[in-house]
Image (cartoon, rainbow, N blue to C red; front, side, top):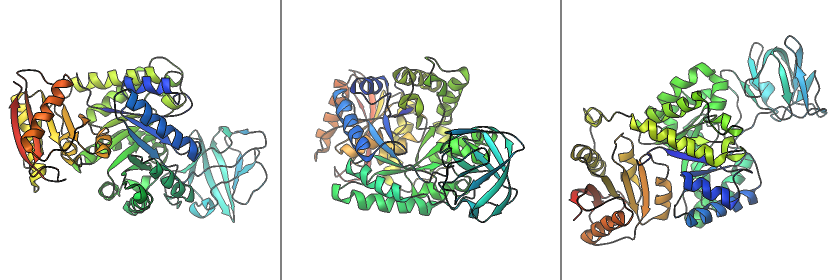
Length: 476
């Protein structure tokens, strides 16, 4: 069975050798994530080159996603590397402190924190494992009482419950990293901690300027991890090409219990607005050290698939885990089983829907026709990939093949749910293009003699946004 849900895998020390990366791609990786929170610019340039080389050798094109670090609000360093905080004891976060920290307090990397908090606020450290209540703010010092204690190490993160931190989404480091990402033409640029559409518009402007010498414009992914982003979700989606449900920091700000419903809402809204969506954070966390996932992790991945996510993402599991290839194999198997159980309700999906554009109407007609005729596949001849994207917003147990002459479009389509992108030369003659498309899928083993398929294209050929024809064919 063709797997519809895509897999995003993060590269790191455990997965940067050609052998392991090749096995990961053959096991089912569709998008490789380069995490700019770690490593130098050269590391990322080298890894991007390795991905392109290994993917080519494996006979596949995978997309590269550059994930910006964003503002990291962290404590400073401790004299002993870590301290043990006890509930009920005072603890001072001091933006002016230059000496190393101890059990009584520590410095701050984010100097503006004292201006962002007030008495009564709750601060969560180390992904929410340590909880502090703000007693008072005195100049550069935030005086707190430890509510839930534990071990606190160097440079651990700080979140404010309910959000409200003023740190900008794009730091000076991010701006330099955008230039690096454009130098190897990343297909997707993930922006951390955006609060509104303006953050995404600024990122797009910076990326387009940095990419201009290379003739490149990446697709933008907004990572939804601030509570302020939730009321702005539609505007952020409109300014982006997709979103990531970044459940780690988001859970710390809004509370763990709120995240599952938010995940479902974000996936549904992204699909309704014709945007892609990635579900991320701790999906197979136990496989960092174990060869099999927990039952809860299996259910988590399956539920994201059933919600309609375009992709599920692995972080430390493939970047630093002991079983990167096995993790991908397990995730692919879970996604396949979940997809078998999906209900297709295209008739209901199209009820009371209005499509103003001809190309969008053709895409919807192809889905409806292929579903009711039991077609083997849908072929979308597309320059930009838009036709395949629109088709991928609806659940259908018919694989979609996006055929394009543009390499950047092929790579971007690697993230679209239920779309297998293939490169095909551009043709000016429609009939020749249709013959070549059928021949390509026959050579790939997708189509055989007697199979029925639906195909869409535009006349005249080779003009983005010009899809205006739907044809149903049978292989001779």
